[in-house]
Image (cartoon, rainbow, N blue to C red; front, side):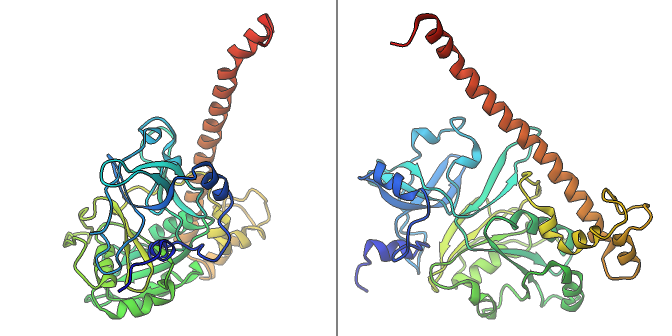
Length: 372
């Protein structure tokens, strides 16, 4: 096989722009760093990153150059969501393994985020610059339509196409028909498959074309790593058995990683997430369009869909046209998003005030002594 050109090498890790205009903001950064090269963040650890300028599509992880985090990305210098994440495109200078460093983060064209765990408001980027999110859920004790709705809320509005992937369809007791009925209001593609079966790759092929980037999200034990191994065609990711009492898995995947598939697509496997807090930037109405449409027909504009007279939402539930648990989840998520939005507004106001305070001493000195 002849050596790949730089453009072809980048295309193997999801570079879309060999013959298309660059995303807004990229030209300026490329001009500001004429000696830098484009690379993609393919692994994210607590201590830093691994980046790649090319991935061999048969053994994707063996050709990764070592990472070295630049000083501007040290903990505390910038907010977590502004730091590189798996899937990000960055500009690098130097040579691997010791002198390679990140000098700029290129603006994202898409990103899936969540509210980070803890009392203080922070955002965490799950994956960046991706085209499709596979929301993976097992057809066993892991199956939870309400949690799937929560995942879809985080994906909605991010510029990413969501696809619900129901694994373990081969398990005894798995009822694909019942599961599909429980998810019929989602208005997104829903596929049921056996993650260990090679046929799974055929079912998911429409979203795994060359140049596409896909992220797998879901709880531990849902089958993300098993599906990753099937799509790779090798046992690359560690897998483990789920607990018998609740079908929940242990964290066999400990970090996010971008892997190249034979189809030319890139796949990002992620650890299971126990907390799925909204960031406050989500649009609940978009994810619950069926509930929101009926809510517009309620007698009272501020109807809570509980005991108010003339409630169109409750009437639809009573007629069997709307799932009562979905309506309850709509109310719960609406409250969480509103609360997170308030925290976000407070954080932005504090940052703005800090910038003003940072400039104030200089202004006072200018007023007293004049500008020099």
